[in-house]
Length: 441
Image 1 (cartoon, rainbow, N blue to C red):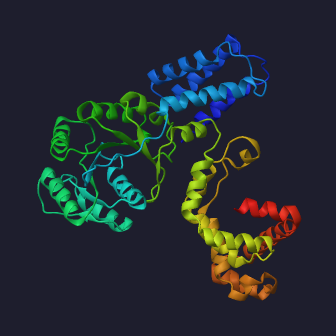
Image 2: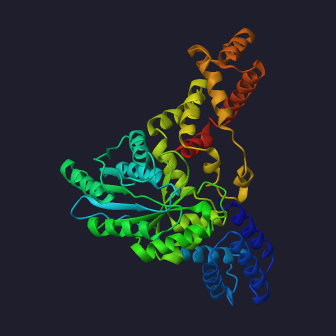
Image 3: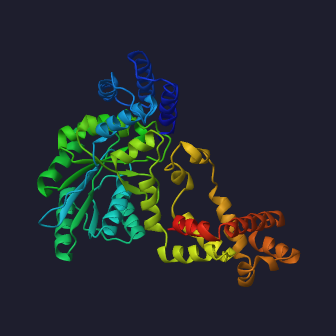
Protein backbone atom coordinates (compact mmCIF):
# COMPACT_ATOMS: atom_id res chain seq x y z
CA UNK A 1 0.00 0.00 0.00
CA UNK A 2 3.02 2.32 0.30
CA UNK A 3 4.16 1.95 -3.32
CA UNK A 4 3.27 5.50 -4.41
CA UNK A 5 4.83 7.05 -1.31
CA UNK A 6 7.95 4.91 -1.71
CA UNK A 7 8.35 5.91 -5.34
CA UNK A 8 8.07 9.63 -4.55
CA UNK A 9 10.47 9.48 -1.63
CA UNK A 10 13.04 7.63 -3.71
CA UNK A 11 12.74 10.37 -6.33
CA UNK A 12 13.53 12.93 -3.62
CA UNK A 13 16.61 11.00 -2.53
CA UNK A 14 17.75 10.59 -6.12
CA UNK A 15 17.72 14.37 -6.59
CA UNK A 16 20.10 14.76 -3.65
CA UNK A 17 22.79 12.60 -5.23
CA UNK A 18 25.96 14.38 -6.24
CA UNK A 19 25.79 16.94 -3.44
CA UNK A 20 28.93 17.18 -1.34
CA UNK A 21 27.21 18.62 1.69
CA UNK A 22 23.64 19.05 2.89
CA UNK A 23 23.00 22.77 2.41
CA UNK A 24 19.90 24.54 3.64
CA UNK A 25 18.84 25.20 0.04
CA UNK A 26 18.90 21.61 -1.23
CA UNK A 27 17.47 20.33 2.06
CA UNK A 28 14.55 22.78 1.90
CA UNK A 29 13.70 21.55 -1.59
CA UNK A 30 13.90 17.93 -0.43
CA UNK A 31 11.65 18.71 2.57
CA UNK A 32 9.13 20.41 0.28
CA UNK A 33 8.93 17.32 -1.90
CA UNK A 34 8.71 15.02 1.13
CA UNK A 35 5.87 17.19 2.51
CA UNK A 36 3.94 16.90 -0.77
CA UNK A 37 4.52 13.13 -0.91
CA UNK A 38 3.23 12.66 2.65
CA UNK A 39 0.17 14.87 2.19
CA UNK A 40 -0.72 13.08 -1.06
CA UNK A 41 -0.46 9.81 0.90
CA UNK A 42 -3.20 11.17 3.20
CA UNK A 43 -0.93 11.56 6.23
CA UNK A 44 -2.37 13.85 8.95
CA UNK A 45 -0.99 17.38 8.60
CA UNK A 46 0.17 17.45 12.25
CA UNK A 47 2.16 14.27 11.67
CA UNK A 48 3.70 15.75 8.53
CA UNK A 49 4.81 18.85 10.45
CA UNK A 50 6.27 16.84 13.30
CA UNK A 51 8.12 14.55 10.90
CA UNK A 52 9.58 17.39 8.83
CA UNK A 53 10.63 19.38 11.90
CA UNK A 54 12.55 16.37 13.18
CA UNK A 55 14.25 15.74 9.80
CA UNK A 56 15.25 19.40 9.41
CA UNK A 57 16.64 19.67 12.93
CA UNK A 58 18.84 16.60 12.52
CA UNK A 59 19.98 17.35 8.95
CA UNK A 60 21.03 20.99 8.85
CA UNK A 61 24.73 21.66 9.30
CA UNK A 62 25.81 18.01 9.44
CA UNK A 63 28.98 17.22 7.52
CA UNK A 64 28.74 14.32 5.11
CA UNK A 65 30.35 11.31 6.76
CA UNK A 66 33.28 9.69 4.98
CA UNK A 67 31.36 6.54 4.13
CA UNK A 68 28.02 8.16 3.33
CA UNK A 69 26.60 10.42 0.65
CA UNK A 70 24.04 13.12 1.50
CA UNK A 71 21.35 10.83 0.10
CA UNK A 72 22.24 8.03 2.50
CA UNK A 73 22.47 10.49 5.35
CA UNK A 74 18.99 11.90 4.70
CA UNK A 75 17.53 8.41 4.18
CA UNK A 76 18.84 7.37 7.60
CA UNK A 77 17.43 10.51 9.24
CA UNK A 78 14.03 10.07 7.52
CA UNK A 79 13.97 6.40 8.59
CA UNK A 80 14.72 7.31 12.20
CA UNK A 81 11.94 9.93 12.22
CA UNK A 82 9.45 7.55 10.60
CA UNK A 83 10.19 4.94 13.26
CA UNK A 84 9.66 7.55 15.98
CA UNK A 85 6.31 8.67 14.50
CA UNK A 86 5.19 5.05 14.12
CA UNK A 87 5.85 4.34 17.77
CA UNK A 88 9.55 3.57 18.14
CA UNK A 89 9.40 -0.10 19.07
CA UNK A 90 6.80 -2.82 18.59
CA UNK A 91 4.21 -3.15 21.35
CA UNK A 92 3.20 -6.47 22.87
CA UNK A 93 -0.25 -7.49 24.05
CA UNK A 94 -0.87 -7.52 27.77
CA UNK A 95 -2.38 -10.48 29.59
CA UNK A 96 -4.01 -10.80 32.98
CA UNK A 97 -2.22 -12.37 35.94
CA UNK A 98 -5.61 -13.76 36.88
CA UNK A 99 -6.95 -15.37 33.66
CA UNK A 100 -8.97 -15.17 31.60
CA UNK A 101 -7.82 -11.88 30.09
CA UNK A 102 -10.58 -10.08 28.18
CA UNK A 103 -9.83 -8.40 24.84
CA UNK A 104 -12.58 -6.03 23.70
CA UNK A 105 -12.55 -5.83 19.87
CA UNK A 106 -14.14 -2.52 18.80
CA UNK A 107 -14.55 -0.49 15.63
CA UNK A 108 -17.01 0.71 13.02
CA UNK A 109 -19.17 -1.65 10.98
CA UNK A 110 -17.37 -2.93 7.91
CA UNK A 111 -13.86 -2.46 9.30
CA UNK A 112 -13.31 -6.22 9.55
CA UNK A 113 -13.78 -6.74 13.31
CA UNK A 114 -15.24 -10.24 13.10
CA UNK A 115 -12.66 -11.59 10.67
CA UNK A 116 -9.90 -9.91 12.66
CA UNK A 117 -11.22 -11.58 15.83
CA UNK A 118 -10.73 -14.98 14.17
CA UNK A 119 -7.26 -14.04 12.88
CA UNK A 120 -6.20 -12.79 16.31
CA UNK A 121 -7.52 -15.95 17.97
CA UNK A 122 -5.47 -18.05 15.55
CA UNK A 123 -2.36 -15.93 16.20
CA UNK A 124 -2.81 -16.26 19.97
CA UNK A 125 -3.28 -20.02 19.65
CA UNK A 126 -0.09 -20.30 17.60
CA UNK A 127 1.73 -18.42 20.37
CA UNK A 128 0.75 -20.65 23.27
CA UNK A 129 -2.58 -19.12 24.32
CA UNK A 130 -6.02 -20.73 24.67
CA UNK A 131 -8.50 -18.21 23.26
CA UNK A 132 -12.29 -18.30 23.38
CA UNK A 133 -14.24 -16.08 20.97
CA UNK A 134 -17.68 -14.59 21.52
CA UNK A 135 -19.81 -12.22 19.48
CA UNK A 136 -22.05 -9.74 21.32
CA UNK A 137 -23.37 -8.18 18.10
CA UNK A 138 -27.06 -8.95 18.53
CA UNK A 139 -28.13 -6.34 15.98
CA UNK A 140 -26.53 -7.26 12.66
CA UNK A 141 -28.25 -10.25 11.01
CA UNK A 142 -26.20 -13.45 11.30
CA UNK A 143 -23.28 -11.61 12.94
CA UNK A 144 -22.91 -14.24 15.66
CA UNK A 145 -23.27 -17.03 13.12
CA UNK A 146 -20.47 -15.44 11.07
CA UNK A 147 -18.08 -15.70 14.01
CA UNK A 148 -19.06 -19.35 14.52
CA UNK A 149 -18.16 -20.12 10.90
CA UNK A 150 -14.82 -18.33 11.34
CA UNK A 151 -14.23 -20.32 14.52
CA UNK A 152 -14.67 -23.54 12.56
CA UNK A 153 -12.25 -22.22 9.94
CA UNK A 154 -9.49 -21.56 12.47
CA UNK A 155 -10.34 -24.61 14.57
CA UNK A 156 -10.98 -22.67 17.78
CA UNK A 157 -14.01 -22.50 20.10
CA UNK A 158 -16.72 -19.85 19.90
CA UNK A 159 -19.11 -19.30 22.79
CA UNK A 160 -22.65 -19.39 21.46
CA UNK A 161 -24.70 -18.78 24.61
CA UNK A 162 -28.40 -17.98 24.81
CA UNK A 163 -30.20 -15.07 23.20
CA UNK A 164 -29.58 -12.27 25.68
CA UNK A 165 -28.19 -8.75 26.00
CA UNK A 166 -24.59 -8.08 24.89
CA UNK A 167 -23.46 -7.70 28.49
CA UNK A 168 -25.07 -10.98 29.62
CA UNK A 169 -23.52 -12.87 26.68
CA UNK A 170 -20.05 -11.45 27.42
CA UNK A 171 -20.24 -12.24 31.14
CA UNK A 172 -21.40 -15.79 30.37
CA UNK A 173 -18.51 -16.23 27.92
CA UNK A 174 -16.00 -15.15 30.55
CA UNK A 175 -17.51 -17.63 33.01
CA UNK A 176 -17.27 -20.37 30.36
CA UNK A 177 -13.60 -19.53 29.74
CA UNK A 178 -12.85 -19.75 33.45
CA UNK A 179 -14.52 -23.15 33.73
CA UNK A 180 -12.86 -24.62 30.62
CA UNK A 181 -9.34 -23.29 31.19
CA UNK A 182 -9.34 -20.72 28.41
CA UNK A 183 -6.96 -17.84 29.22
CA UNK A 184 -8.16 -15.19 26.72
CA UNK A 185 -11.69 -14.10 25.81
CA UNK A 186 -12.02 -12.18 22.54
CA UNK A 187 -15.24 -10.15 22.61
CA UNK A 188 -16.36 -9.17 19.10
CA UNK A 189 -18.54 -6.10 19.72
CA UNK A 190 -21.21 -4.51 17.57
CA UNK A 191 -20.36 -1.67 15.19
CA UNK A 192 -22.20 1.05 13.37
CA UNK A 193 -21.68 2.82 10.09
CA UNK A 194 -20.86 5.89 12.15
CA UNK A 195 -20.15 6.71 15.77
CA UNK A 196 -23.33 7.25 17.78
CA UNK A 197 -24.06 7.64 21.47
CA UNK A 198 -25.97 4.33 21.79
CA UNK A 199 -22.96 2.40 20.48
CA UNK A 200 -20.53 4.14 22.81
CA UNK A 201 -22.77 3.68 25.84
CA UNK A 202 -22.97 -0.07 25.18
CA UNK A 203 -19.18 -0.30 24.84
CA UNK A 204 -18.69 1.72 28.02
CA UNK A 205 -21.03 -0.69 29.83
CA UNK A 206 -19.04 -3.69 28.57
CA UNK A 207 -15.77 -2.05 29.60
CA UNK A 208 -17.08 -1.34 33.09
CA UNK A 209 -18.37 -4.90 33.66
CA UNK A 210 -15.55 -6.87 32.01
CA UNK A 211 -12.52 -4.74 32.98
CA UNK A 212 -10.74 -5.72 29.73
CA UNK A 213 -6.98 -6.12 29.62
CA UNK A 214 -6.92 -4.78 26.07
CA UNK A 215 -9.39 -2.57 24.18
CA UNK A 216 -8.37 -2.97 20.56
CA UNK A 217 -9.72 -0.68 17.86
CA UNK A 218 -9.98 -2.25 14.39
CA UNK A 219 -9.48 0.39 11.68
CA UNK A 220 -9.89 -0.01 7.93
CA UNK A 221 -6.68 1.41 6.42
CA UNK A 222 -8.52 2.00 3.13
CA UNK A 223 -10.60 4.79 4.72
CA UNK A 224 -7.56 6.96 5.40
CA UNK A 225 -8.15 9.94 7.69
CA UNK A 226 -11.72 8.78 8.46
CA UNK A 227 -10.16 5.83 10.30
CA UNK A 228 -7.91 8.21 12.22
CA UNK A 229 -10.80 10.46 13.29
CA UNK A 230 -12.89 7.47 14.38
CA UNK A 231 -9.99 6.02 16.36
CA UNK A 232 -9.51 9.37 18.09
CA UNK A 233 -13.18 9.44 19.16
CA UNK A 234 -13.14 5.82 20.35
CA UNK A 235 -10.04 6.58 22.40
CA UNK A 236 -11.65 9.66 23.93
CA UNK A 237 -14.72 7.68 25.02
CA UNK A 238 -13.23 4.26 25.82
CA UNK A 239 -9.51 4.62 26.28
CA UNK A 240 -8.36 2.15 23.62
CA UNK A 241 -5.06 0.39 24.31
CA UNK A 242 -4.09 -0.54 20.76
CA UNK A 243 -5.02 -0.49 17.09
CA UNK A 244 -5.30 -3.21 14.45
CA UNK A 245 -5.13 -1.92 10.87
CA UNK A 246 -6.94 -4.05 8.30
CA UNK A 247 -6.63 -4.17 4.50
CA UNK A 248 -2.99 -3.12 4.53
CA UNK A 249 -2.58 -5.19 1.38
CA UNK A 250 -4.94 -2.90 -0.53
CA UNK A 251 -4.17 0.14 -2.67
CA UNK A 252 -4.78 2.72 0.06
CA UNK A 253 -2.33 5.60 0.30
CA UNK A 254 -1.04 4.59 3.73
CA UNK A 255 -1.81 7.78 5.62
CA UNK A 256 -3.75 6.00 8.36
CA UNK A 257 -0.75 3.85 9.30
CA UNK A 258 1.45 6.93 9.67
CA UNK A 259 -1.16 9.05 11.47
CA UNK A 260 -3.15 6.88 13.85
CA UNK A 261 -0.33 6.30 16.34
CA UNK A 262 0.34 10.03 16.67
CA UNK A 263 -3.32 11.05 16.96
CA UNK A 264 -4.37 8.44 19.53
CA UNK A 265 -1.07 8.00 21.33
CA UNK A 266 -1.73 4.24 21.31
CA UNK A 267 0.39 1.63 19.49
CA UNK A 268 -0.54 -0.23 16.33
CA UNK A 269 -0.48 -3.85 17.47
CA UNK A 270 -1.21 -5.77 14.26
CA UNK A 271 -1.84 -5.26 10.56
CA UNK A 272 -4.11 -7.37 8.36
CA UNK A 273 -2.38 -8.20 5.07
CA UNK A 274 -4.88 -10.46 3.33
CA UNK A 275 -8.12 -12.38 3.59
CA UNK A 276 -6.76 -15.69 4.86
CA UNK A 277 -6.84 -16.42 8.58
CA UNK A 278 -3.04 -16.39 8.83
CA UNK A 279 -2.81 -12.94 7.19
CA UNK A 280 -2.27 -11.03 10.44
CA UNK A 281 1.18 -9.71 11.31
CA UNK A 282 2.55 -7.98 14.41
CA UNK A 283 3.32 -4.33 13.67
CA UNK A 284 7.01 -3.44 13.71
CA UNK A 285 7.66 0.32 13.23
CA UNK A 286 11.24 -0.20 12.05
CA UNK A 287 10.21 -2.75 9.42
CA UNK A 288 7.35 -0.60 8.12
CA UNK A 289 9.70 2.41 7.91
CA UNK A 290 12.14 0.32 5.88
CA UNK A 291 9.35 -0.76 3.52
CA UNK A 292 8.26 2.85 3.02
CA UNK A 293 11.82 3.86 2.08
CA UNK A 294 12.20 0.95 -0.33
CA UNK A 295 14.63 -0.98 1.86
CA UNK A 296 12.35 -4.01 2.02
CA UNK A 297 11.45 -6.10 5.04
CA UNK A 298 13.68 -9.13 4.93
CA UNK A 299 13.13 -10.03 8.61
CA UNK A 300 9.36 -10.44 8.09
CA UNK A 301 10.00 -12.40 4.90
CA UNK A 302 12.41 -14.76 6.71
CA UNK A 303 9.95 -15.24 9.58
CA UNK A 304 7.16 -16.04 7.14
CA UNK A 305 9.31 -18.59 5.32
CA UNK A 306 10.43 -20.21 8.58
CA UNK A 307 6.82 -20.57 9.75
CA UNK A 308 5.62 -22.04 6.46
CA UNK A 309 8.42 -24.07 4.91
CA UNK A 310 9.08 -27.62 6.10
CA UNK A 311 12.69 -27.40 7.33
CA UNK A 312 13.35 -31.13 6.97
CA UNK A 313 12.17 -31.15 3.36
CA UNK A 314 14.20 -28.01 2.66
CA UNK A 315 17.40 -29.69 3.85
CA UNK A 316 16.63 -32.80 1.80
CA UNK A 317 16.02 -30.63 -1.27
CA UNK A 318 19.29 -28.79 -0.63
CA UNK A 319 21.22 -32.04 -0.78
CA UNK A 320 19.48 -33.17 -3.96
CA UNK A 321 20.20 -29.83 -5.62
CA UNK A 322 23.87 -30.03 -4.65
CA UNK A 323 23.97 -33.62 -5.98
CA UNK A 324 22.22 -32.55 -9.22
CA UNK A 325 19.32 -34.86 -8.41
CA UNK A 326 16.52 -32.28 -8.53
CA UNK A 327 13.45 -33.95 -10.09
CA UNK A 328 10.10 -32.69 -11.30
CA UNK A 329 8.66 -34.27 -8.14
CA UNK A 330 10.88 -31.96 -6.07
CA UNK A 331 9.88 -29.03 -8.27
CA UNK A 332 6.18 -29.72 -7.60
CA UNK A 333 6.76 -29.99 -3.84
CA UNK A 334 8.55 -26.64 -3.84
CA UNK A 335 5.69 -25.02 -5.77
CA UNK A 336 3.23 -26.26 -3.16
CA UNK A 337 5.29 -24.79 -0.32
CA UNK A 338 5.70 -21.53 -2.23
CA UNK A 339 1.94 -21.20 -2.69
CA UNK A 340 1.41 -21.65 1.06
CA UNK A 341 3.44 -18.49 1.67
CA UNK A 342 0.55 -16.43 0.28
CA UNK A 343 0.26 -14.03 -2.68
CA UNK A 344 3.66 -13.70 -4.34
CA UNK A 345 3.09 -9.98 -4.87
CA UNK A 346 3.10 -9.48 -1.09
CA UNK A 347 6.38 -11.42 -0.83
CA UNK A 348 7.96 -9.32 -3.57
CA UNK A 349 6.82 -6.23 -1.66
CA UNK A 350 9.13 -7.27 1.19
CA UNK A 351 12.20 -7.21 -1.07
CA UNK A 352 14.37 -4.07 -1.31
CA UNK A 353 13.43 -1.72 -4.14
CA UNK A 354 17.07 -0.94 -4.80
CA UNK A 355 19.98 -2.91 -6.22
CA UNK A 356 19.65 -6.14 -8.21
CA UNK A 357 16.31 -7.05 -6.62
CA UNK A 358 14.68 -3.88 -7.99
CA UNK A 359 13.91 -5.68 -11.24
CA UNK A 360 11.50 -7.98 -9.37
CA UNK A 361 9.35 -5.08 -8.15
CA UNK A 362 6.02 -4.81 -9.90
CA UNK A 363 6.33 -8.30 -11.33
CA UNK A 364 2.91 -9.80 -11.97
CA UNK A 365 2.62 -13.39 -10.78
CA UNK A 366 -0.63 -15.06 -11.73
CA UNK A 367 -1.53 -17.84 -9.23
CA UNK A 368 -3.21 -19.63 -12.13
CA UNK A 369 0.20 -20.07 -13.78
CA UNK A 370 1.50 -21.91 -10.73
CA UNK A 371 -1.64 -24.03 -10.60
CA UNK A 372 -1.20 -24.86 -14.30
CA UNK A 373 2.41 -25.96 -13.77
CA UNK A 374 1.37 -28.18 -10.87
CA UNK A 375 -1.44 -29.67 -12.96
CA UNK A 376 1.03 -30.58 -15.72
CA UNK A 377 3.39 -32.29 -13.27
CA UNK A 378 0.47 -34.09 -11.59
CA UNK A 379 -0.53 -35.52 -14.97
CA UNK A 380 2.84 -37.26 -15.28
CA UNK A 381 3.52 -40.73 -13.98
CA UNK A 382 5.84 -41.22 -11.02
CA UNK A 383 8.61 -42.45 -13.34
CA UNK A 384 8.19 -39.43 -15.60
CA UNK A 385 8.49 -37.04 -12.65
CA UNK A 386 11.71 -38.74 -11.57
CA UNK A 387 13.20 -38.92 -15.08
CA UNK A 388 12.00 -36.22 -17.48
CA UNK A 389 14.10 -37.60 -20.34
CA UNK A 390 11.65 -40.46 -20.99
CA UNK A 391 8.85 -37.97 -21.81
CA UNK A 392 8.54 -38.33 -25.60
CA UNK A 393 5.98 -36.88 -27.98
CA UNK A 394 3.12 -39.26 -27.20
CA UNK A 395 3.66 -38.87 -23.46
CA UNK A 396 3.59 -35.07 -23.85
CA UNK A 397 0.25 -35.26 -25.66
CA UNK A 398 -1.16 -37.48 -22.90
CA UNK A 399 0.12 -35.10 -20.19
CA UNK A 400 -1.41 -32.12 -22.01
CA UNK A 401 -4.80 -33.83 -22.24
CA UNK A 402 -4.69 -34.89 -18.60
CA UNK A 403 -3.82 -31.39 -17.33
CA UNK A 404 -6.14 -29.46 -19.63
CA UNK A 405 -3.21 -27.64 -21.24
CA UNK A 406 -1.47 -27.68 -24.61
CA UNK A 407 1.59 -29.60 -25.77
CA UNK A 408 3.36 -26.25 -26.17
CA UNK A 409 2.82 -25.48 -22.48
CA UNK A 410 4.17 -28.90 -21.51
CA UNK A 411 7.22 -28.30 -23.73
CA UNK A 412 7.77 -24.89 -22.17
CA UNK A 413 7.72 -26.33 -18.65
CA UNK A 414 10.16 -29.10 -19.55
CA UNK A 415 12.48 -26.59 -21.23
CA UNK A 416 12.49 -24.34 -18.15
CA UNK A 417 13.09 -27.31 -15.87
CA UNK A 418 16.01 -28.53 -18.00
CA UNK A 419 17.52 -25.05 -17.82
CA UNK A 420 17.25 -25.11 -14.02
CA UNK A 421 19.05 -28.44 -13.88
CA UNK A 422 21.89 -27.15 -16.08
CA UNK A 423 22.29 -24.14 -13.81
CA UNK A 424 22.38 -26.34 -10.70
CA UNK A 425 24.93 -28.65 -12.32
CA UNK A 426 27.24 -25.70 -12.93
CA UNK A 427 27.06 -24.90 -9.22
CA UNK A 428 27.66 -28.45 -8.03
CA UNK A 429 31.43 -28.42 -7.56
CA UNK A 430 34.02 -27.01 -5.18
CA UNK A 431 33.43 -23.64 -3.57
CA UNK A 432 30.24 -23.07 -5.56
CA UNK A 433 28.82 -26.22 -3.98
CA UNK A 434 29.50 -24.79 -0.54
CA UNK A 435 27.99 -21.43 -1.53
CA UNK A 436 24.80 -23.11 -2.73
CA UNK A 437 24.55 -25.09 0.50
CA UNK A 438 25.00 -21.90 2.49
CA UNK A 439 22.39 -20.11 0.37
CA UNK A 440 19.83 -22.87 0.86
CA UNK A 441 20.34 -22.79 4.63
